[in-house]
Every structure is written in structure tokens, then in C-alpha cells.
Length: 491
Image (tube, rainbow, N blue to C red; front, side, top):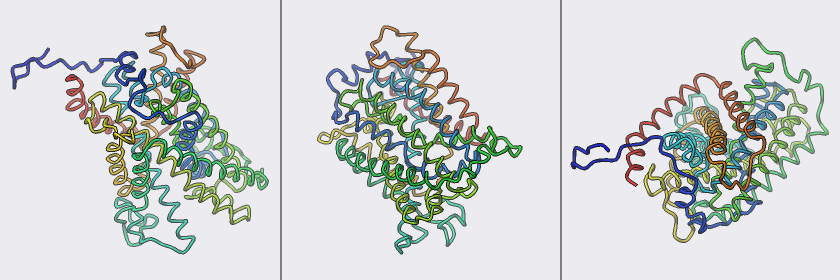
């Protein structure tokens, strides 16, 4: 105990590595009684939530960027490598989500294994994945939305479609820098209101949009296959230019670290555990099923895009539309734009959903203000939190360009994924007696492969990204020390 000089009382000593037992976590969240959330999600809705969170900017934008700048047609291998790394992580997520079916996801799993300070670090990391990820995708959504409007003869004022911090000369900033990216902010606010209204309503909307974009992706693959020129695949892995990451096998690895952003979202299924009807069964189905479906689709689209046109022509904002234009069927470009809008919409929805569920658990542990753990009495959602998060993310999406927003998302997510794999190893060794409704196979090799895969992809990212991560972590640790750790000791 430590003496409190202001009151004379003895203040509790802070234990930064305090852990919660699995039983304690389940009891605090009333898992046995069903909890306070409305259990409205079955395996189909959870799988759709995962697909909704995965298929978006990656398949419609990053496919072309990675092919043109890093891997050539080898982008197919990049998607396969990133998918393999995610498969190891997905199995670990599935075991922990079935064992600890609460809304905190990686944050809660880390609290049960490595302790409080590491749980805070992961929660802070997940802001990068979910919060900034949603803002990043919203900016991409706004770009496609503006192109659709332009196609029907409507052009919004550039100062209201361009972020304030965009560089002069940025696309859309015809009169210098913009003022605010209004479409990006509005889509965030609209989806936040939908999520606040209810999990069932937002799930039905997500299921419908997922159906639309899956249909579009399948149309692209089926139609594009007949227009493939295999000459565009030669060489499949272009010769390295002499610089790491610029073609060759190092380019394929660099490409995998970039397209990894495409897979972000499957883990959002685990944040819905307290809203699943049968979480021990349905959450693993949602995580693994959505990842498997999306990996196959990613590889198919990447193969078609680089087979229909030369990879050198794909470094554009809408590479799949360019590839479809090359087939001579101009109507396909409109199909792609509709699919892109649908895909990006559900990604934003899934990421906003995940962010508030992580904040709910952190606030439940008193690491954040209690308002983030308050559920609406009728809708049974963290409605106030959803609106607050929506406003903050909307401001970020309106002010910052995609180049600034997306730099931090992948590295924060990869570090969280590595710790999830470590949590499985720890609990298997420390608490082997726990009932595990889903058991990841190949222990200890699956989580070990997951950890090393994540570290390899992190190592392929540029040093500037690492520096920004350290600055973000320093700010988060300061907030934890002066706020979060003090409040947790007073429970």
C-alpha cells in the first residue's frame, strides 16, 4: 500500500501485470445469465459480419496497387501468404472466442494472460485497427461515391470532397487543399446511427449488402476468366529491381504485408460474442468461414485482374474497374463501382461495431469512462458510445487523407494478432483444465506459426511506420498510467 498525501489514507499499489481469471471475466460479464446484450446473431449473420468486414478496399483498390508497385502478377501469392498468416490467427481467435465469449476480443484475451498493461496496449492497438481503419475505408468509399456521381453528371464542390490536410494538388483539390471530406464523414455518421439503433437491424442491413457484393465479386471472376491473356502472367514474379520490396520475392512478401490490410475484419466477429445466440459454436464458424471464403475470392480477383491487363496498368484508384473496361464491356465497370460501394459500406459498419465493443469491455474494467459501457435500455446496444465513436471517426475521415490514415492500421493489427496467438499458448500451458468448446489444432505449432507470420509481415513494413507505432504506444501508455491504471485500482 502507498500513503495518499492528500487524505492520509493508504492508496492501493498499482499492479500493472494483474490478470483476470477466465471464470472472473465470465462472471463479470454475466455470460451464464446471457449478459445484457441482445443475443441476435446466428452463424450466418456472424459469417456475413466477417465477410462484410473483410471484402472492401483490399479487393477493389489494393489488388492493383500491390500488383503495380511490388509484386506484379505475384500479388496472387501475396494474398495467399497473407491469408495463411490470418488462418493461423483465426484458429487462435476461434479457440479464445469460444472459451471467453465476451465483447472485448483480443483486449480481454490479453487481460487473462499477460496482464493489465498489455491488455491496455492491445486495446489501444485496436483503435488503430477499428477506429482509424473505419476512417480509412470511409475515405475510399467517398472516392468511389464521387466517381459514381460524376458518372451521372453530378460533381460536388472539391472543397467538400477533399480532406483539409490533403496536399495541394491532391486529386479533387482543384482549388488548393480542401476543407472537409463531407461524404466520408456522413457515411460514418449514418452507419453509427444504424448500429446504435440495434444489432438485429444492422445485421439485416449487413447481410443484404454482403449478398450484393458477393454477387458482384463472383460476376467479376466468372466474366473476367474468359478474357484472361496468360501472356500478362509472364513473368509471374517480375525480377527484383535491386531494392527490397520492388518486385522479386521480396516484393511478394512486401505485397503480403500490404494486402494484409484486406483481411482486417474477420476478427471483428469475436467482438460480437456476447451478441451471438450460441457463441461457443457460432463465433468460430463466423471467424473461420468468413476468412476462408474471402481468401478464395481475393485470389480469384487478383488472378483475373492481372490476367486481363498488364499489372503496370493497375496503379489507379479503381483497378478492377480498369480491368473490366479492358474486356470491352463498359457496363462491367458500373457493376464494379456498385460492388465497391457495397463492400466498403459493410467494412465500415463492421469496424465501427468492433470498436465500440472493445471500448465497452475497457470501460467495464474502468480503463475508460463509464459512458462507453452504458447500454441503451431499449436497443440493448452501447448507443452513446456508438455515437461518440462515430463523431470522432467522422472527424478523422473528413480531415485526413487516406495516405495518412492507412499507414498505422496494419502494424497495429499485426501486433494484436501476435499477442492473441501468444494468449492461446499461455492458457494451454497455464490452465489446461479449462473447457474449450473449440480447440485450435496443431498446438503449439499453429500459434507459433501465427506469431512468426505476423512478425514477418511487420518486418516488411517501412521504418516510418514503426516510428509512428512507437509514438502512438507512448501516448497510449501515458494515458494508461495517469488515468486507466488509477481507476482500475479503485474497483
